[in-house]
Length: 385
Image 1 (cartoon, rainbow, N blue to C red):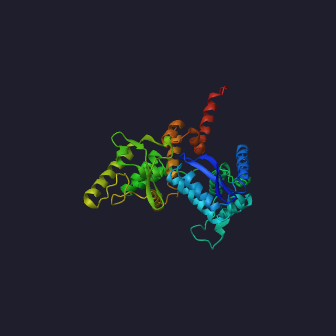
Image 2 (spheres, rainbow, N blue to C red; image 1 turned 60 degrees about the horizontal axis):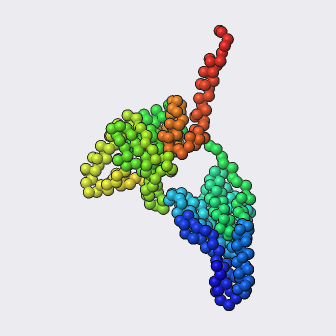
Image 3 (cartoon, rainbow, N blue to C red; image 1 turned 120 degrees about the vertical axis):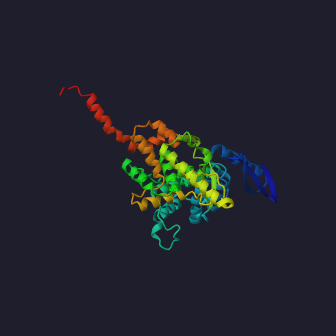
């Protein structure tokens, strides 16, 4: 479509289909010349688009493009927490290369940015909030988000090629998950017996179910059947932009029901009774959250509270320092070592695919090789002693 915008000036509309919400995406190119020449240019554009060679005559900056990409392409399709992560990465990229024209962005620009991420901790003049060099795995995360943005720019024909694909992809460093073995787990449980009932309930339930921290803080009392020892995991809470936001688990398979042990049920019953006593004591000061784990005034618990409570227990009892997520790894590893079927463990953890469980816990799964070989030694031995 061509529209006259002034003397010998025309605007050519280029249709790029629709966005994630079905909204039409249309870009415009200004053309100076006669109407006949403008029509010839329109035909040329259509042919270039058909061949995949067309690039908009566009002077937008990296900042304007990445901001638009986040708003119209990323935000509608991702959960708030993931979107917040994408935005944080894009904001830092914008602060480094935001003034560059998108179409002039080169592989060298990107190499410079990734090296900055790796080395930025050495610059003492930088604010403390960013005075930290990133691991290669985190740089890989930046690489993936930027690559996704530039791939879309290529599809929208804003750039002639994706410069990120000409940059060597950071190599993922595989790290074995840290967790407690059986003896350390027993030491932890023994230590918990002397701690507050709230700490006992949070840590025991995390260890028993293997649920993620956001799933743990998202639990409501209606999700826990204490009579039958069954926990329904279908909600999450996360902190985004200084606010506690309700959400859903990572994927469809993460919505699940898991049975818990009798000792954990007993602790939860005691904790529920403790909460009821608090509620009666505070009366109208009780905030009335339906969550299992709340503040001392019955309000939503901060998603980071379980981590802090767990760390305090470890330090107080001089136990090895592991992060809260390691309770999930501990739960899975103990199940594997006890001979539980890998498919059952995968379902209990809420993994989308059994291969995910195998990839994460291969170290524990493969630890059974020695026992298997010992059995083979007996089975395959045909010589009489």
